[in-house]
Length: 410
Image 1 (cartoon, rainbow, N blue to C red):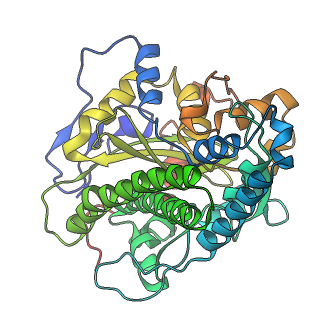
Image 2: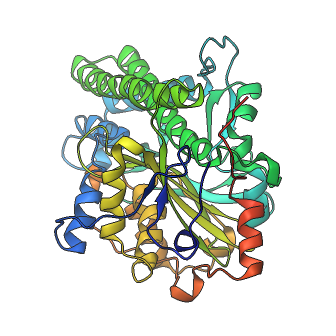
Image 3: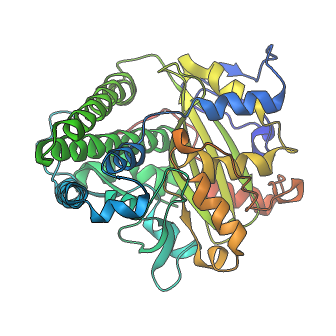
């Protein structure tokens, strides 16, 4: 049973474990560095070897004197063909449903509810996001170049192959429905989606790199691909063992842990949605799930983690005190922590060239961010944070909060 404190509705720091209603946990004072240093520590915690870095470095092994010479090298052209073939393999590969003992083929799952994308973001059925392909690196001549942001249909935007249709519905319906009676376990469901998305991204990346190592015809590139593939394969195993299995244990009543959460609602559509995880430190258990979900008339930002790791959520909240740092937190989640934000055409098309450039630069993998570019795209202030008027409370209860009661996924 969850108790939703008023402070949570107004952007406060109350966090309530959703299983034990009497176990109230508030943000505790901690000996942290200054807020800017704390934010930088959180950003550095996102560091990880990236596919873009691997591909760009591998391509540059074949550059003789200048980047433009890459395409004049027979070996480089062969490598480009390898990347294209490995990309086709990874994007078309079928996966088994992640639900325990389910042998069905995974179907396309949406990291952000499709209906919410259509309602709040899409124009003519499209949104803007990173190019959903590994081949986008081929056109980049160096690691300091920005990423490609392209128009993508809502059926393909932000999707992953994690669960069969039946288990996709059972696990995530609580994160998507607007029916009041279906809200039990909603925050578990949203955290589950963050974990599953992260696992599936890393799994696809490992498959791509392993295939590239198999196809490439020179030993140096093969060794580089294989080393990075091994890293991502290990990440998949850790993500499954530490996070996914723990969530299944929580659902099946096999663990006493709970999901700690922090919800920051806004009174208007911020025109960006995203889902994923970021690390507060280099510790494997410091991952925080995030769901920034825009609706037609309001937006919610939800941060989640396991109760045993709640201190990392406390660190994030201490680094971004609300309401004064709400704007910075939203922009960092959307354009620094996230890998594939879904951006409304109404927002993207009104940005100037400098603003678009800052987004593309900050969407580079963290280990390529030699220079941080400030992204102050989403303008929010204290007046945009929900205050508990009756109309706002009704919207929140109808749309995002679960009915008080025991968590039941069956």
